[in-house]
Amino acid sequence: TNGTVIVQNIDGSIVTTTEESDGSTLIRTDFLDGTVSTIQMWPNGTSIDHWGDGTVMTTFEDGTVITDYPNGDSMMVNPSDGNSYYYNAANGSWSLVGPGGTLIAINPNEAPTTTSPSGVTETRSPNGTFTWVTGDGTTVVHYPDGTVTITNAGGTVTTRSPDGSVVTNFADGNRSTLAADGTRTHTSPDGTRFTESPDGTQTITQPDGTVTTRSPNNTYSTLNPDGSRNSISPTGVITQTAADGTVTTTQLDGTQTIAQPDGTVTTQYRSEERRV
Image (cartoon, rainbow, N blue to C red; front, top):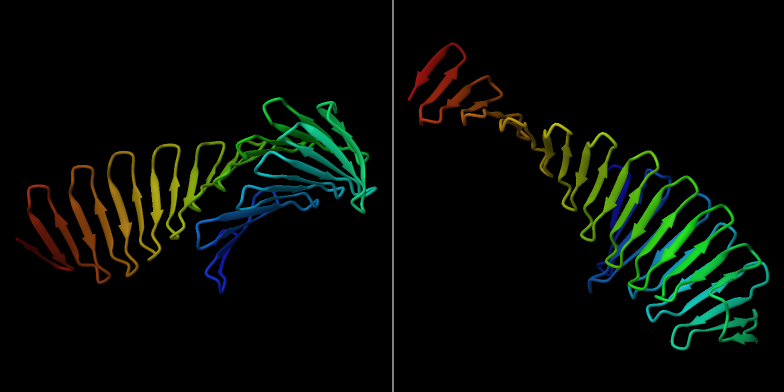
């Protein structure tokens, strides 16, 4: 639903594919051992692959590939000449390796900012944070804890956390989140919030506090700011609960039962009324 496709593989893993509002496709794989991997792909060819072991591979539109490893090492492959730039976190050294694996240079004193021939600039901060800026203005920041933040030229900011959760803040004020448990939330600039849980429960929260919920069994309920509640069951039974606690239930044949807070119950069968 809502652009989401869920598939369970033979090995038991669950793959969730979602079309995001920014045009990207997010694929999340939940393995039986609890490991989660995600890959987000944009129409221009940019993608971020977050592996379950903490490795993050970023592919840019020009073909440049940057891989960050859990131990702090980093590798950048330049598509124009096939050269690879390696950063060794243990000793802070940089290595330039040719396509065939030939070691071209080792530069222990390499400046913290390196620009590849394809135009991608990489900056390494003393705290282990890596920042890449592409020619189109996209900025990718990889923090030591595994968090990755992408800011495109249009101002959209996507943050992916190590637990697999993703938060996207769009330039127009919209906000989209994917929690680690698979819960998806979209918040509009006016404060309207749409939430979909992994079990299929959907909730819409209006700025005035009105909350409408659709359960997996297609029961609809609305909680109003004054405390009153309306609900419709899958069979069409309507239940209205007033702010004072009065409950009115209407069956499909028109029969109404009204239960007052004092315990009085009135049932109306079309043209007759019976009080108990």
